[in-house]
Structure formats: C-alpha cells, structure tokens
Length: 201
Length: 201
DNA sequence: ACCTGAACACCGTTCAAGT
DNA sequence: ACCTGAACACCGTTCAAGT
View 1 (cartoon, helix red, strand yellow):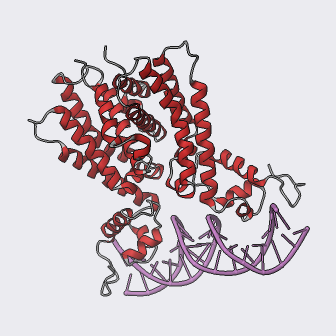
View 2 (cartoon, rainbow over the protein chains, first blue to last red):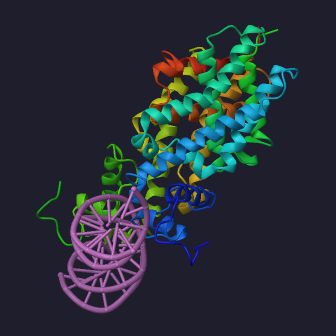
View 3 (cartoon, rainbow over the protein chains, first blue to last red):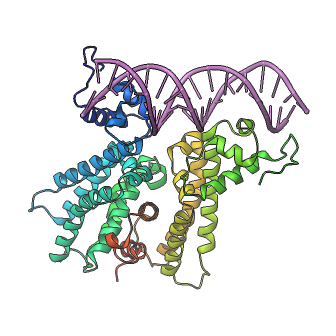
C-alpha cells in the first residue's frame, strides 16, 4: 500500500523491505522475485535497497535466516507437554516441520538455496543447526528413556532430517500425490522412519 | 568448440543445444544458465533455439527428462546380480541414487524444479515414476522373500524415496558435513531407513 | 526449413546528484 | 544518513528478413 504522504526518508525501509519480500514469498511466483518489483511494492526507487543490503543475495540470505528462526519456533511450539508419549511428540514435531515447509514453500526452498548460503554461509548454518537441535533434543531424550535404539543420536538426527527434508520437498513439488504414494503418504513415510528409530520389542 | 566452417544451417542444432546445456550443468553456476550464453557456446545466434524449443523452460524440461532417464539407467546398473543379498542390493542402489545426485548436482536440482514441471508436467512425472519403479521393484521382491516387513510397498517406497531425496539434497547443499551428522552420514542415515524397512527378527 | 539481427520490455548494480 | 534517476551491461522473447 503506497502511502502518498510518505516523506523522502522512509524511516524503517530495511524492515519494510523484508516484510514486503516475505509477503511476496507467499505468492506462487517462487522465491526468485525481482528486486525492482520488491521496490515497486514497497513504494521506493529500485536502488534504495542497496543502502540496507549489499545485494539481492544478501537480502535473500536475511529472509532465509528469519525462516530458520521461525521454523525453530514452530518446532518448539509443536512439542506437546512432557506427559505426552514420545512417539506422539516426535510425530507432532515432524508434522509441524512438513507443514511449515508446505505452507511456506517459497521460503523453505529459499532457506536451502545456494544463493542464501553464498551470502551468509556461516550464520545461516548456525541458524539451521539451532532449528535442528530441537529435533536432536527429542531424539536424545528418547534414547535416555529407552524409547529409541541406542544408536548414535547424530545418525538418527541425520536420518530424521533427511526424511523430513525429502518429504517436505516432494510434497511442495507435487510428487507426493495419492497416485504415487497412496493416501496420507507423509504420515506413512514418517512411520517407516519411526520403525527405524524405535527400539525393537 | 565453434567450427569456423559451419554452414548456415547447423544440421542438428537441437541435439547440440541439449549437449552444450548438459555440459554447462556440470559447472558451478547452477542450472539457471542463460539461453544467450548457451547460444554463444553453441556458436549460434541467441534466437536460434526458438526453432527447436518453445522457450527456456521447454529446453530445461527436456534436460530434466533426460536426467530421470539417466538416473533410471544408473539405478538399474547398480542392481547387482541376483545372488547378492537384498540388503546389499538396496544399499548399492541407494548409494547410486545419491551419487548420481551429487555428481550431477545442477541437473538433479533442475529435475525437481518447478520450471521443469511447469513445462512438461505429465511427461516428466512418468519419467520420474519409471526411475522410481526400479526402487519399488526391489522393495516388492524384498517383501515377497520375507526380507522386509509386510507393510504397503507403496509406503515403503515413499519413505525410501523421501529419504534418498533428502540425503541427496542435503549433501549437495553442503549440510551433511561431518560436524553436523558425523562421519559417513549418508551411509548411517540409510541404515536407519533400513531398520525401518526390514522385518524385525 | 532453419537461422539472424534489430527491437522490446525487462533485470541487477553502480554512481553522481539530490534532500 | 538516506533516497533518486540516469546509465551500463545484461536478460528472454518476438518478428521481419535473410539463406
């Protein structure tokens, strides 16, 4: 919404650009929006962003980092109370992960894109690690309580992350349709994963 | 290699463009090469490709389909002789899948990109299905022989595919490094998957 | 039937100039 | 300190014209 009375100096253009970009990611045009279109929607000239971000990749990397932060928050929120069974906890978090990816498809893809990594590799990695840590915590507690097989929690986390990442992307890209994987493919794929994690009884 | 004596009519420009594009995918610049650069390398004007492909997405879709075909061939080639254990067969094919993705990172990403799907959705899907079928065959035989749990082979294939897709992309994007998932993360993630597929003994 | 060159409507980025 | 407008070197795509 362009404000006709906006002064020459925007005031908080950096924040406004990030928010507008985030809105654009909700659309169907992928995450490769143009900087010029972003500037148009924000109501500034197409060169204004260069005062706040080094270049396009820099702005995208910022968005990616916000994405990992949101993902971490949502994973934490999906962790039910301590009384709930650990299997349910794990499934709830897994479904929250996939839901986040599917509902923020463009952002999710951006988060794992080469562009984002090139611009802020180390910082992005630590943000991703923080999100992943929520999953690792649940797996480690599962081992301590004897729910999970006593394998390396790191390997279990790697397998879980890969499974969630794969399920999410296949869902986003429309490959996980009913004809290919049957009804409720996501849930059933998660259950196969669980079988591999849980202690054999 | 531009041939100075090439006549006005190229002869087989369509094929030449696909091959040159395939070479460009081996580079480090991602799959978003420009049509103009492709034309430059092929030694033709930047509009010549429009006689052979409807647009850029059409050319990319063609490359993606060739990619799925190659993947299928490599999965078949990785299937060892019938005498070999089924676990080894599955692991060999899984590693061939991941290797294909990592060694053809740009092509692999392109194969699953929205651009490729938009241009040739149905055809691409059936090519992907054909590649996936190799995996399904191994799983179904594993069920018949009692190696695998008697769950829906479709669900097992979905889980396996998601796992392979996730492992491949996390490897490509550099997330599966030693600090995060420990040594040989790919192999160990595959073993967790196998635990979930195999019959409990 | 196949290829070219000019043209159009776009990009990302730089930089001197404006407020 | 922050924003703009012209300019530069690119894109993808169209189309009349060349061989």
